[in-house]
Image (tube, rainbow, N blue to C red; front, side, top):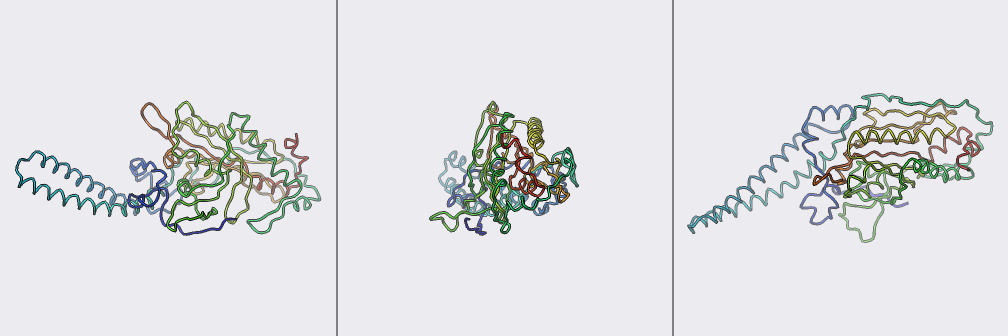
Length: 415
């Protein structure tokens, strides 16, 4: 596997003007200051419910400093414009010379202020503002998981030779395993059958790349430490937009396609599904099925979310195990998520529920960070996004083998 490196000099998602001269800025995220900071009480409540490690007081101080610097820059720029007009209108050479001297001083002051403003913007935007999490959805419970659907487990009938099935999956540490026999066949067939279930329900099959750049990792607020870093030939030491291995069965690989993409409204809603590998650092790779949807409005996206959830049910209803769908509470959400539901299969042998899939609603949070837009007349708007992992073959196979479930119990895979 590619080596891992943990040195990151700066943000790749937001580059200030001084850094943009040396680093290529792929995009400029939409910075909605009024929405995020217009209601500080709502922001503080969001942070509190999520138990999210963001210092609101420091954020507000940085915001005030940033606004003050930007205001001073505008004042000086306006002063220079006024001086230029007075120079053009004056007929006195002596007065013109005095005005030109003032203009030179104003230019130097603006140059110095801009140099200072880069540090202020970097501290506020890159290190604080872009760390603000998404707004919580009204369906997200404040604490404790909420079961919204459950299918009871069938009567337990574990075979006596269940240990023989478990030997088909040998683990050599957390990041290495080997599949044989029916487990290898399931690993191939399960993602194909799951993708086909979504395709039958008007979802478009997609194929995504296995690699993404750092700016997308930051846009999705994923820890860079959880991904493998790929070294490139002749890579500058100070390069910030590095290459990471994530796998085509991940949300990150979908975001790469939609970055800076502009759609006509008629293209929405989107219903996409992709099957591919999912790579984690210090965890075993897995074949996973990732779904992605986008809609023009919040109401439409919520309806699309519920439609996708019905397709989840259609797939899991075919499996010979019990499962439940739970609404995830605020503290368990990722920063980019407004709400999320988890799919948990019942492990009869160990008498517990195990998470095997999820579906999240991201509002227009991700779209603003990756400049994913659609046109409405002359206006540019941001689609609302839903996405999630429909299934992880490794998690499913572990439960199947633990409970003695073989290919004979999964006829849909051998049709």
